[in-house]
Length: 161
Image (cartoon, rainbow, N blue to C red; front, side, top):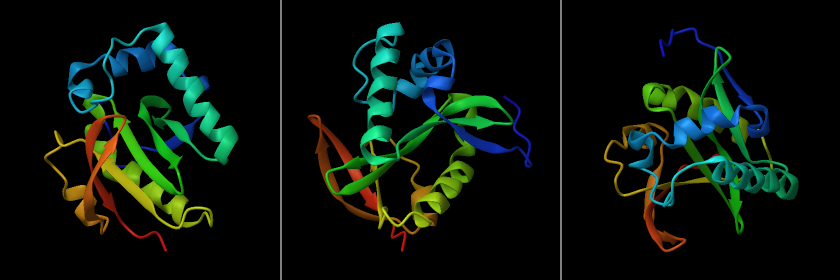
């Protein structure tokens, strides 16, 4: 995908996106490499379960994960999910759109800072991720290693206040 400096980033709900686009995205080995919780192939069933789980978060918490669009084209998914009393932010981009991460995160974090329900956001990063400069630019500090569904993640936290 060719990304222009003036490309418009917008957020949509996951059910509004073609299942084929999300399945192809999540089946990309370059994406799966950094998704240790993905342990089986993505198919229609995996997609339906994924979207249902993310929509349940919207109903429960009033906030959740979005489909992310760049100039109207699907480039990935991400957003916020409440885990206990904390909000986690996640971002999973198509491999040819990895360069959009900083812009999308900046826009999402501005959303979080304007929402009084979100005092701070945690980033759970798989240990396979080696390029963490974006987290440092956000002022995120390493909190420690956490276990999520039996899988280790590195936890970072910037203040949103």
